[in-house]
Image (cartoon, rainbow, N blue to C red; front, side, top):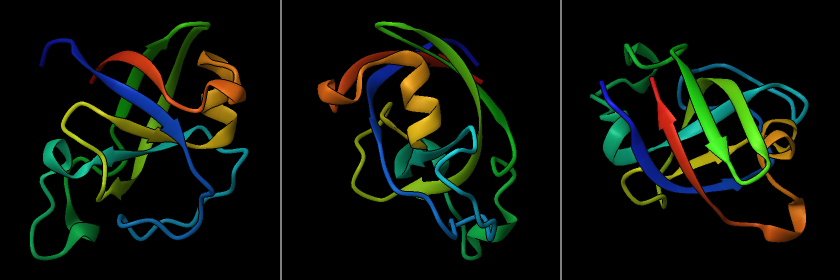
Length: 101
């Protein structure tokens, strides 16, 4: 619970660590590995399917957690292109975000 902060980026989606296949037009994210806390089987992670409200420089978006970002630092979230477009310009690439579960 509470508000978290980090950096938002975007990636090309596909089959995620939650066992769900997504497309770049879906409003989903890959949560950083620290906050994701995957166990032995990431498909069974209770954070899979949770909604996250993200605020960026150009607005906010609600996304579903369907993947893990193994290279993201604590607080960072990797977004689908569709979701990233709601909060920032693609040219920015990496932006400051705040987010809540």
